[in-house]
Image 1 (tube, one colour):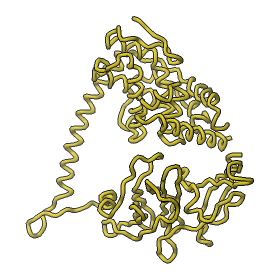
Image 2: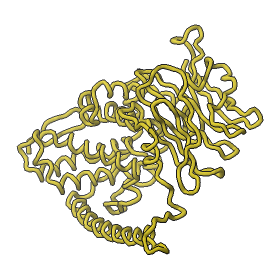
Image 3: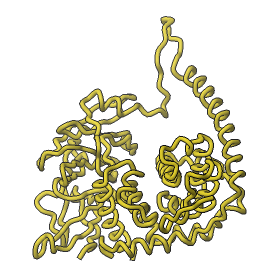
Image 4: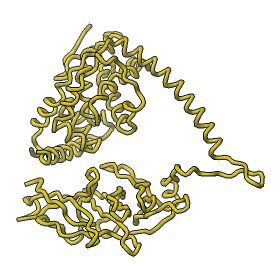
Length: 258
Length: 180
């Protein structure tokens, strides 16, 4: 099916869901039950608020030796990442075409709790150290056209337990992506990628491809531009981290558009 | 009651009826089509009936139809409420987590039918689309709304609807291709 098969989409959608033929329950019963449920929700909400307030009093305030108060944080409570990002130059995404977020994380791995956010020019990688967010590194968002909006998405976690983050920008109809991971030396940088097989990866997959997460997998789409891009074949590539080569390698390459 | 025709979505009671009559008539006439639309908007078919019933409860509780500038827009208003509740449900899994089913088990769609819908390749593909693309495709090609009506319902521009629809169809085709 190509993108123009509107009639077929219409027909398939109807075929798929028209088997649903629910008997409408009596209208009065639905309304009455809705009212009862609304009352129950109010009561439950009130009780929950009261319990939360009581818990907050117990958890937040303890009497310090000097007689004052101090704030304590329970072990399971993650520190809020967005306020930290705002204080450190993070720029929220506005009017994104595809629900870009400017903050990713916390991502909890065996190596710790990580996060990332975008500023005007950088991707900032952060980690929880002693219960607080701490900036680990800043990675320039690289070359490419000036972008109007920048965002970040959590990528796959490497076998070493180090997470990756996919940076992303939108400007007009242009977007570029890059997966970022830490290397063995502990320096955050763009991850490297191996050959794209039949597809043409261009010079730098980080800045010119459509890397994104599909479920738990890192995938990208490339056009082989043969004989020219408009008539080329588009391939979907699934990427897998190769620990020995210290880079992502194509695990599968599938033609998706003739 | 006076009725008018509105394409495949059937009959809509006009403003000459009282609000209660109008709501009841819309419920009887459009319950099924709204459930099917919700099934396309949601990640789980089983929650579709709850979302639609919740929409009618909200509209009835607020007496909102009486406040509409254009009383003939009642169906569009309820459809918007269904869309908003579907969005809430996707964001917070409200329906599954917090709401007990509104109706008795005997009234609900049976599990085999729900499973059949969930197994349909096009439904699975729709559920992989980003939310706005999914909404645009469902409203344009299932509910058969115009681009302007879809834009109005989604709260975006007509150009955005064209973009979401085009991208949605492209991705839908990819997902369907990959699943075959």
